[in-house]
Amino acid sequence: MTKTRWAAVVAVTAALSLATASPAPAETPQAFTPIESRYWGEPALRDLLGNPVDTEYTEGDISYQQFQRGWLYHSPQTGVHELHGEIASRFVRSGAHHQLGVPTTDELSTPDGVGRYNHFSAEASVYWTPETGAQAVSGQVRRFWADRGWETGRLSYPTTSTQPTPDGVGVFNHFLGIDRAGASVYWTKITGAHSVQGAIRDLWAANGWENGFGYPSSDELTTLDKAGRFNEFTGRDNPPASAYWHPATGAHFVAGPIMQRWHELRRELSYLKYPTSNPYEVSEGNSQVDFQGGYIRLDQNSGQVSDAPW
Figure 1 (cartoon, rainbow, N blue to C red):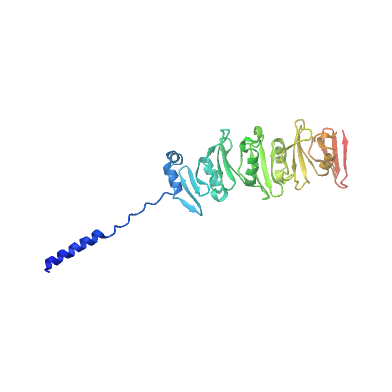
Figure 2 (tube, one colour):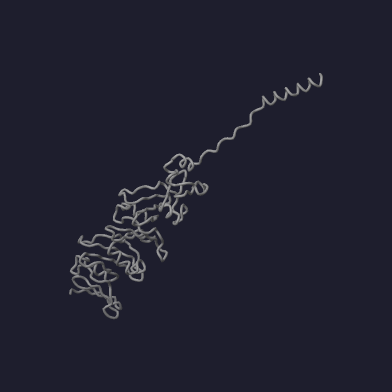
């Protein structure tokens, strides 16, 4: 075989080898994450949130991404949900998903059309109105509020976020209350969650909140004669107490042995009727509460209690 023919055979063999070789595999495009799928699949959502300002992050089974005007969060249990505006700002200030969990709803309108809200997976919600701003409600306080009709109940919208009491024993939220008269829900392990409202709440606040007559141990209840309202309290430096309100007398505290004697007489159904004063000292070692029909006096040295009409 001549050198020329040999070169031709080598060239043909090489060509055939190249022709029969397996083609290089094509690169598989990377699939969108659930957050990317929703963001790029919904033009209205892109308009709402704006452009991404950071990459997508993953913590365990949670993923999240920040945008110009809000966030998208995803988990297998909740799917992908957005939060934006003032609710998103409150979410971040309240510890974000580390405290409130991931959103389980998009931002929604409240049934009364006044506010907006998101629910979150750690038994938490953030509610916003023009009057109250955005406030977080969580845990046992949120459960209490939900059981009583959310913002459509007597408590109305939250005016603060859930926070610990100064003594570290409980947590609380303040609310607008019915007729904007003010309301609060306080929770401790011992008392559970209870609400205090209106004039009774004002009286309790004026006496130092939980540092005065202790934590509420009942909700606001209707009196035996159906004409007034009352709350019971645990006491702190003072013995257990009750605050009673009536339109004619306002709100006043009754505590300790004086309260016990009044209860023995059947409270406002007795000749004494409703209290018209808080406990006060009438002489050294003697305290008294005035009522519409008389008074109850306590000798603090002997513990003796006496009552008499005016």
